[in-house]
Image (cartoon, rainbow, N blue to C red; front, side, top):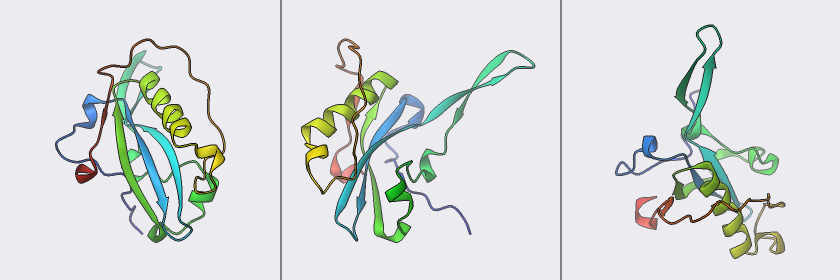
Length: 136
């Protein structure tokens, strides 16, 4: 069985230009949502040569770490990228901001159960972009 691509990025956006994305998973069967983040790349160290190489993660085929989502049939899930972030701090901030803005922990419609802490990272202007609905 071949892998099923879950997260798709409009061709006008190059994942090489961003650290990662904030995505929403919609469980169409149970009418619930999950907000998560995924990095597009990671650094891999070759200890023999003491070099670091940037490699693409499994973001295109990523389902999520959430156990409830993992247990669902792929056919009942819809994945959409809603923000692209230029760095990890902006991505972490976006997740916390959206979870609070959407009152995710107070609504049964959200699967999310925790909000991680975020440090003061200064201005986030120009460190993330919103992906319009027609480009998701």
